[in-house]
Length: 358
Image (cartoon, rainbow, N blue to C red):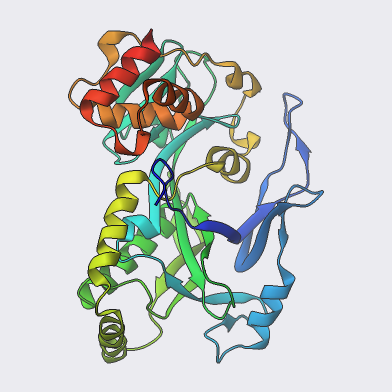
């Protein structure tokens, strides 16, 4: 394998339960597209149409619908897909379903946390560490960014990568994204439970991605109907164990190889975000959630924080947070220093941060 290039599944399509609605104008004369919720799945390409929505892949959807229910597809009374036959890519739940907290202003991520304990916030002086979870995550509290004074809202983000069974192509993955607490909790809980029952096996199992209605409560305690997505195994416990045994038997000889691939994937962030920020901002952080025109947030300075704000205890974690905000600058410094970002040591991280600080 070529050094400096990390392996990654290409994203060949999206699985969605929502889309962008007709364009509106905010009270500050900012154009935006409010989200429209769906009670079923649509499968799209990664190309947007004239209305800003990703173009539906009708060929795949029709093929799945025509094979229902024998192919594992479930349809509602209107003929829409509410159950998708899927397989996961990895045995590690965190690689199948990448989660974090993110706060946006405009299309820029201004704060994020991968562990829900420490957040990395973009401020005028650079990047500072903050305790996570803070008031930015509470929709009942109207919080503002300390530099811009503009309203900011943090949400949990989840990105599930999967294979849709029955598709005659190998090597690419479909992606489902969400900012729903209940969906994130349900998907992660299902994966952990199934893995516990199969001695850690998730990859290759015949699973279903399902969407169903559930009553949830908002921050004021008011009940609302929500569309929740989860993962299920369409069978009983004996069926699950029998399929797991077959998978283990078929996998004999490369289980250790798969484990090494997953370990390497975690170290190198195999499912990197690329256009993730822009996508999440457009789809899940509409302008209607802000009470002011925050388009100027994109003009915030990318200057690094002063030396005393660096995390001396964990410079690698800190550098990765910097990379999330300004990847091009980090990669340029790495190239200048002759370092491979995917294999940096603590000493390397300190060198890179020092060089960027100037």
